[in-house]
Image (tube, rainbow, N blue to C red; front, side, top):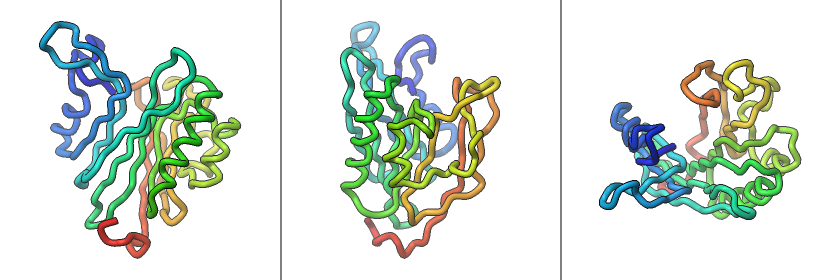
Length: 205
C-alpha cells in the first residue's frame, strides 16, 4: 500500500484515505522509505496496512531477511482490542524468490511464537500451498482455505494459483471463506469469518 509514494496513487496516504471513509482504525508499516520528490514534502513510503473495526492498541513492523539487492519485506504485528481481548494480528507481503521466502516464513513463525494467545497471520505470500517453503507455516497454523483447492487469487482474470492466505492459530474457527471476484487490484481479495472462545484469551492479553 502506498503512502505518498508516486503518481500511480496520486501521492495519497492510502491507508488513512480508506480508514477515514470506512470509519475504521488503522496502522501502516512502511517497508520502503524514500526521500520526497521535492524538499519539504512527505517521505515516500510503500508497505502494508491493517484496518480494523476494533481499536488498535499496539503496532510494530519487523524487517524480514532479504538476499542481495531485492525488495525489503516486513511483518506487521498489530494488537487489536476485541471487546477487551487482545488479538495478535500479523500481516505481510513476502519475497519473489523461494530462497528468501523460506527464511522469511521461518522468521514469521519465530516472531509470532514469542507471544501466547490467538493469532491471525495473513498476506500475499507469493507461494503456492504445495511449495516447500509453505510447509512449516501450514504445519503450525490453520489455513482458512484448506478445503478449497481452487481458491485462486491471481491473476484477476482467469486466476490459476493461490498465493494469498489467512491463517489462524488452532483455537480459532473460520467459516464462509471466500475469494471475491473484482478487478480492483492485481490480486483477488479473500475474506473469512473468524470466531473464538473468549476463555482462550487472558483478559487484556
